Length: 251
Image (tube, rainbow, N blue to C red; front, side):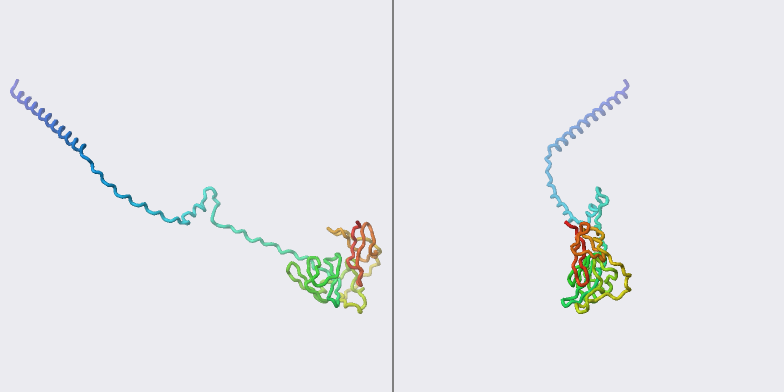
């Protein structure tokens, strides 16, 4: 072999040996460091005290308004209170005023002959009495004050006088007794009605709704207690004629 190749090979072998030796040194050093790190006791560090949690704010009702107004299960829910308008009751209609057939100025007080309506039975009344739905508050020979449903209605007697034929067999004021008796206030003079022929005993008049009694026919001359068609005649005789004249069913 050539001397140069031998020298070169020896140099390579020496270099390789140096590399192997250096590797073993580094490996040993790494093992020593590793053992030292594993055997070192770690000193525990105390944890800092925990910070207190922030105090929550007080609940405000305004923040929960949407819960009441936007209910998922009732979309029409809202805080607006709907107040029903007040009911307006229609005023009760006032019935016609009673009819007056005459007024008596008696020492004991003024009395009038009134009926609830035309065709109804008439009766003598005074202050405090009731005619139909009307109560007489005050009464004199010229004026009368009625009370109806808490309201007072003042009327002139002349405006309430029935100038047609009297109902229920009541004779007109023209048949009143002489002036020696109690003072009688007669209705104003009106044109005389045509004279009708006398009516004989005719019996009870037409039946009225809701009433079992039947009224008398004007001019009926049947005697008190007469029985006609199953009805008995009853009335009270007065200086002015028959009062409260009516026919009642015979039991």
